[in-house]
Amino acid sequence: NILNGLIKGKMNFKFELGEKCVLINPGASPLETPIISEVFPSGNEVDVFSEPQVAFSIPINKPFVIDLDGKKKVFKAKIDKFSVMDSKNMALEGDTIWNREKDKLTLHTKEIMNPKEKYTIETHVGFYEMVKGNWTDYRPGGVKSTETSSIEFITGNIPDSIPFDHISYMYPLVNQNNFHPKEYDKGFIQLDKGMASVFSNAKCYVRYHDQEGALIEEMPMNYDGSNNQLQ
Image (cartoon, rainbow, N blue to C red; front, side, top):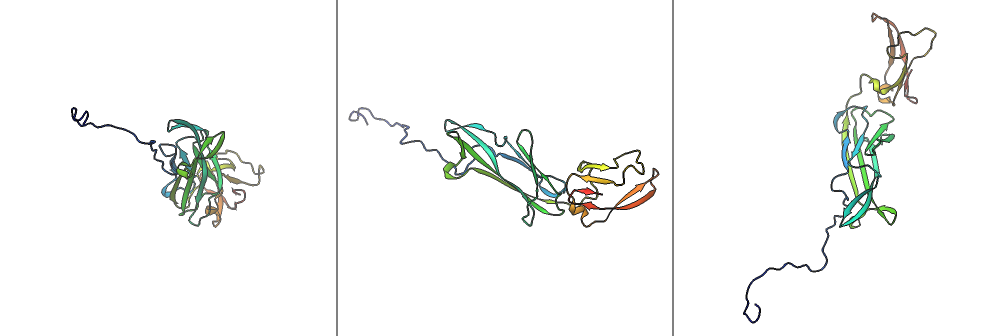
């Protein structure tokens, strides 16, 4: 109603009052997709020779730039925790090895895993923001930004043979044609990792056969767990 009723009508107007609100999810990742893309192994009857592995969607500990709220900000992701625990809460020991691109982490275990055992792979990735030349915890809503993953798997039975790719070296050599009586007085098999669960309570023998397959001699073989060697 305008000018004492000379002009009448109904109109809709859009207007804003105050500052625009931005919803913040406390502890949320700065990425739109998960950074932990794959965890291996999982499921049941997992080979005891398997090595736990985690793959990521971006390189770890490498700066990246994201546009947040119209501002370009620099972040990086860092592994805060990576562990493999058995059902007794004992950690699976080994060396963590990165691939060249820094987006895949493998635990090269010192021992093969126990048979018929439940394991849990736990991974925590924290996000850090570059602020005034220093890396600080990224804390949206006052909560540290962390992505976590927990994957369980169960191993299978003890293997009845050792794959060749888990033998670092052996003497006599595979398919060696000639081995002279006084060439060397000891034979051995050097394993790439410990196999106590296979050999500690087992009786081991080495058998020598002729070209026709007839048994020539059988001798006991011992497992040296300190050196991962059969001798």
